[in-house]
Length: 533
Image (cartoon, rainbow, N blue to C red; front, side):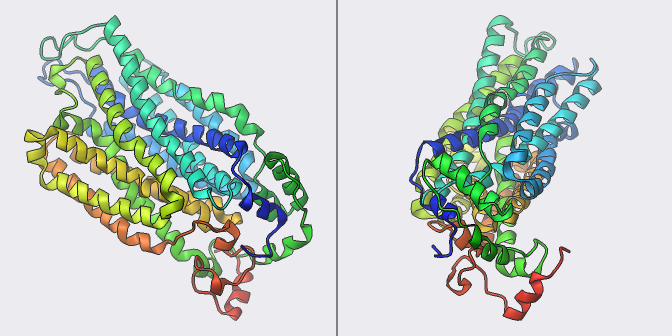
């Protein structure tokens, strides 16, 4: 740690872990719980939507959403998330983290409720309403990514910062579990109240009209955790780093952080000038690229490649489940029965594959470091997906449980791997005045990858054709190996203060392993005067 550090920054970096840190993890984490529930619950009900609104009495197979409609329903929230990340990430650096933090929750709660409503009874009205509000739901979700990560990184101490940020993100795993659990419980209740024959026995009555209420309730319940969290999120003070380094008010920062940490913090207003001098460069400047350009390229590319695989797994699992043997073919179940089986399979995979990986990252990130976990995760995902792709026919016909194990391990190493570390690293590598924006750029790149999964990779699995699914798995194995290679553009950050990592403390960059090659003095003087491109 540099001896030039402000008192408030030194206090934050060296604070013992206490109840306030836990509270911050829960408050920020509940946003991610909501995010995950809202993004992934749609997978449990898309087949029900197809049966309800695309029923063909002459077909031997139940109604199914056309590929373009299916991709729109599952992907429109991702488009909203990408735009929300960029907008709220930029706003978080301009106005402050707290000022825009509550807006994202209000937007998420309102749009989750409206997603279950319809402005008309026709198929077009139902899907038009759903797509409109799912976009704005995603817009609010997008804001939570950079803001939650930035707030947690700026509150945490340097010894446990990675674990705290990873714990916030791990609530995504809880949200995915609840997306399956809530859908499973509700569909079981509907099944007991409104039993129906299998599709092959009675095409018309296998789809009960009451199912139209089920998918709406599942989507609307996503508003509940956002509503419950809003009050506590509004009580959080602005982060000490933003107040001191960006607003230039060391006295207010010391007072706010002293109150939440329950300690006396020295006010070092006079030291702010050195931080300002080392932190004047803009995002689109040669100095930023010299210091952090490769880091930003690394965080953006790895998140992009990771999300192609991660969202392909989650969005296409409903098509993989029959091959694994976790669900019956569509003709052998009723509409409500299919929702129950799909959501039950989602719940099982999330509980035993997805969820543990998040918490392995929390427990091991400060021991192994971010870099090693990311490399390990990408490599293991590549291996398992390659095996599934090569041996798909054998696994599908003769080894269901081995298939389920391999498929679950891809989820485990996604989360005990790059799905967690790509969230943590952008919150640590960049300076305070650009931290939220750079995290937003990285996260938006990830959502671009998720859109590739929703609009392209998913098209390989919709019909359940063996050769198409094999091809998808091969593609995903290759993208994971690319992610492994691009991981070498980022660096290890554990155990160091945010100001040391970014160079904001004005320390000697030649002794700072997380900084890129220092700029010659003349270049630095010039770049300090550069305007944003």
